Length: 497
Image (cartoon, rainbow, N blue to C red; front, top):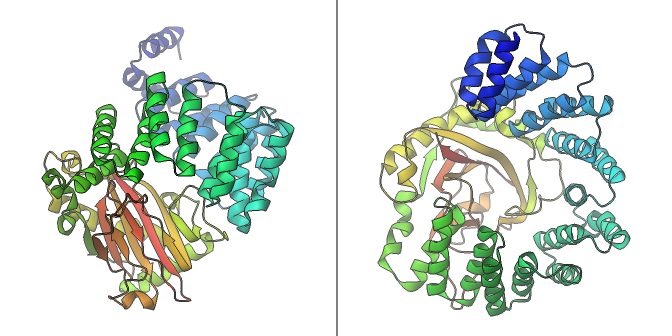
């Protein structure tokens, strides 16, 4: 690569003209042995949303750089982003072997190993990150979650984190992680104590005021939570976090008019935030406002389909049997990941989209037709769902959940999605009872209940092979079931393409 081409590529990059950088370098790459060319091409691909191609280019750059610890870590970062976890773990390990081993390298390795299905390796890598930086809050939090999923023992999971706080009592990040973990694990009293401890070390300012909103919410003092959230926004705290805290307090206290105003302000900042849309729809329902009717048209917005059977299988039963067998080994954890909707069961960590298993790959073939049929049935329009319907889609995240007896999903939305889903692979026999609806998916019930309550308005019965598609902004959860069987599902989010 000549000096003139290097200069031209650098000038284009400095001007942010990454598409032209890619067009200039792509024909030159071929069998190039220039680490610099591959690194710049990687950046150009990354900036033009060719993330998988960027990962490949970073790998080539790293392999050509004899001392490329940083290059290997760059490759690991992008490989993780595109879900190529085994390769990401290998790249992070190579960076560490070459001596480029900041705590963040061990953390990246741990994350990749965990999502690649190696919890033992992940635990060791988290420990290495913490050994390198004892107050590394992110590593402590993720290690605690891994230990929780492996054991279901909240005290054992947070033991290291408590010790770190004792050794570094002024570290607010550690206390914040503890508060969030305990709240997600259902330990409300522990979360309140952690919030009080965090307030004791946090200086005044917008972040403290936002924390005071969360602490008041934990105590059930919703007027105080709303006041603190308003103050936090005025002081310059993160606007989405402030408005989310305010909306939560307004819903719990029954302030429908205030909730509507907050949701509309939030949508002014982020028009497709699915949680803000959910709060607006809920406020309209509470007010009896006819503008909310379109958000409650469950017959149109919630659709059920039988998935298509991939041609390699003779029928639905054979395909679901193979898919169940492929998913079962991925459910190795005792408890659910914290911060997710599941209660009483496990959720896969590996990205299903990257799986090479024929049945799992076949699943994404099986859902393609139903997704297109759902979008065609919606049509186009000006509402938050239809306005994004361009007839093409991309899968954004996919996972499997195996609910244990008594398990369920708390009511929630998918804030960064567009269309959400639940596909049933195995269902308990008790779900055949239409009166009690055990294990059924429900819609319209928010997780926080205002005075007087807002119950679910629509239910769909699960059955093997059934795919339910619905707007990502729609509150949805699961009626707990009591039988001794398990309930296996696959879920994913869809974004417009």
